[in-house]
Length: 347
Image 1 (cartoon, helix red, strand yellow):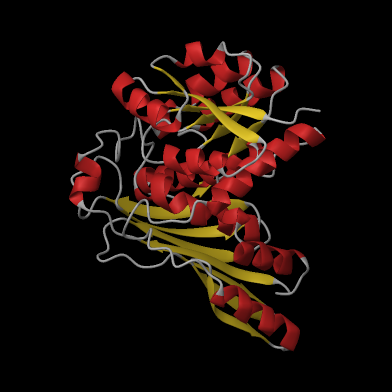
Image 2 (spheres, rainbow, N blue to C red):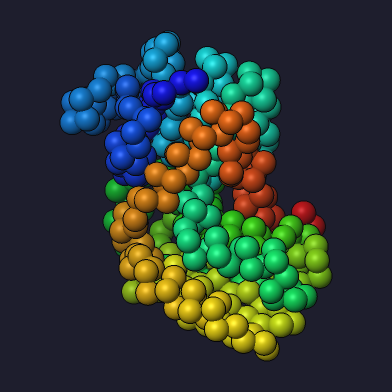
């Protein structure tokens, strides 16, 4: 049984910091190398972390002490390093979205399965205590019949957010705008709680920023279980507001803002349950990522990386594998299609 796992980072942009800092906190993990096509960026990170650096990920993949690759490149550049890593026999953790098209995602899943390596998608919100508690209550039938599930991601990004990174807000590299880049986290939670989406009808537009994709979107969704819901996603709404997830059922309702419950109301009250809700809300991290892209807690990233290590040791699928990562992308792609074609779209 391996006692230590070597990690490599492909892509040294802003999000790579969450992976690097998480790896440093895990006793079983060590960072062996980083890659960026801009070698000066890779050098700065590598020298700062005391590890090797490269401008070509193929050089990193040759290392026998490399076990797990974290892909942190722009969204539309996830498939190539993932497939190459799989063929080199390395397990892969990919930042959200897994990729920007279902075709690319399917090729990544296939490559990992054919080469017997594990594939995980970064959705750290599933590893937060409040969202886990809510999910378990939904699974236990606490809400009764599910009637409505809503996701509201009314965020703000400055014009500089887009102008300083040319890949953001583009179809070829970002795969979309406010939905694919920002809202995907809460959309993933929505479908995780409510179940599979069966159809969507939507409007999307760029109402504030000079980008080719959307900064404002509204969709109505129908779930396979018959429930209805709304998705609102934006980076155009100053000053930015906490993301909100609402679950409504025949027995009660819960509203979660970031990691804090603002509503927990059921027909039959439970004092022990209400005390736990209060405790979770008081312990909630005060994230301001709705207005600052990097203002979030890295701890859920650490938990997800630890889950990948556990999945390798136990020879099981990661908690959020490729198939799970695919689901939110399918919903968002269907929203884009509905908006473009002006009609409902079945998934």
